[in-house]
Image 1: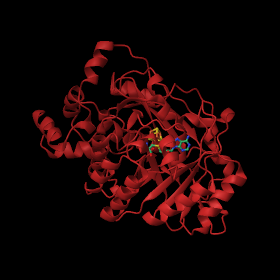
Image 2 (image 1 turned 90 degrees about the horizontal axis):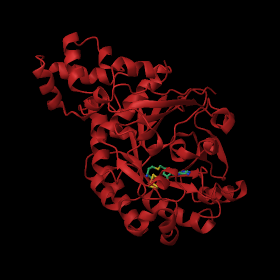
Image 3 (image 1 turned 90 degrees about the vertical axis):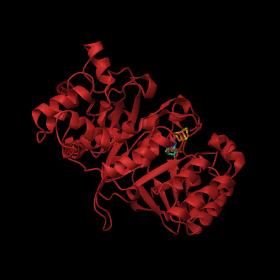
Image 4 (image 1 turned 60 degrees about the vertical axis):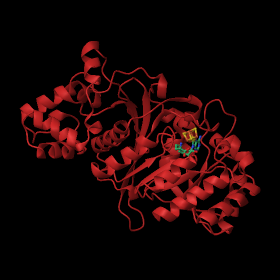
Length: 432
Ligand code: SAH
Ligand code: SF4
């Protein structure tokens, strides 16, 4: 496994940087505003469309790279907008270079994690490159098994910051000979449906500007019931993943505290309505925690809910996180739990999270992208879905993937996004 760490160049001219940070980011500009800006620079509206298209190309990392635009226009634009609203503060490769973890630095020096992973073609479908985005810096829901929940909420991302995570991930995939991005999952830091406007605006921008259809996007939620109902009416047929984790209110109140406001009955009803309105299949996430939600009574409750919703079930053995005594159950307990699900003839996949302990701080990011195994009717696990990847390659023991990491989330001190010249940032990308 290769490990690469890139750190940004140091800030040199504070006032310059501050004024640049106040410029609007390209992804934050609506089409008409961009056309107007291009117009003030004496160019026709089609130049705005040309710019937008080019900005999504994975090999374009700065305005300077868009050679089809006249030099004068590029200069004028550089003085009036920022090419992108975030920078790559660090980048790490794992899984033989097919997984790229980015720490994205935002304007106010906060950071979010973004992961991109390429999976080889499987069973008739072509290869895919999935990006897992964060919607918030931290999270207010406070699930006790989640590293992000322990940070509390600093703020929600802007729609542009979510969209630009996908652009940065696309560029990173390209630098490593991977991509282009085919799928996006909203399973990084934060609760997408608590950052509702950000989520919906970024979904629309991904479709319109990035060409990534909602059908290739999954939004994961802990169960913000009013927002699930609202999302159903947006005309955005994304796959909805419900982070269930418990089948009784008593346990769910503890594991997913939003359950105290929106209990299971309301959640299941809203999820069912979402499935009916959008025609999308639902998926239920179950983070399997030893001695907590791994009993057969909980398995039976999960079966009841999955049947009622005709949902797919994803079991994720818990990634250990610092400061929590919880972890995945022993193998025999997991087997019994999974056997119970398989006997109920549900479609179940199990995420392979063996790398989790080496990367506990972003447990859910790994979990969202790692290869899955299909649960067979006899309760055994099928082969990994990404056939080219052996078990050892998924594992990322601490010693082998211990590149220097800035602190997570609110801890990292970073230069402002897009500060200094495009050239300087480009050098940072290349690790110069
Ligand atoms: N806030 C949203 C999306 C981000 S979390 C949600 O909760 O759905 C994405 C997924 O990772 C969720 O299913 C979450 O429960 C799971 N997760 C969080 N911490 C985990 C951990 N330590 N181990 C395994 N899965 C985890
Ligand atoms: Fe927030 Fe999701 Fe983590 Fe719960 S699991 S704290 S909702 S990010």
